Figure 1 (cartoon, rainbow, N blue to C red):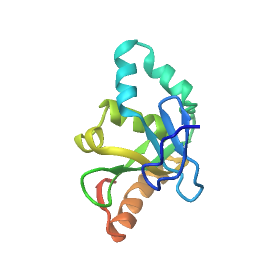
Figure 2 (cartoon, rainbow, N blue to C red):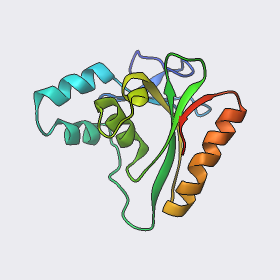
Figure 3 (cartoon, rainbow, N blue to C red):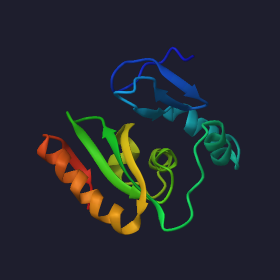
Length: 148
């Protein structure tokens, strides 16, 4: 058991290497320890695979139903989020944002937690759902980045 608290709801979290998952079913937030992830990535060339393995992040799904839509919480602005679509598991994609791989400046510097994700779904469904979800979040007074 970790002594860390969820960055979204302050509940206790479970630790999986450098990945922390909120224990509250109502929240379900997830966050990476950015400092430790970046340190580990500098130390060994195969660190990324090890980080994902220890965190028990599922490998990408092959086939037609393999896409996810996800929401990252961003620091700096109240209720600021990023909405994206990926073929990787959202935990792995969130890690990519942290390490700056195919990442916008908003997510690389400001992502603090994975709030939620939906999927797996088909590419067509994810392509439709991403802007819908962004619109829903805008209607509930969130500052939304991404979600095109």
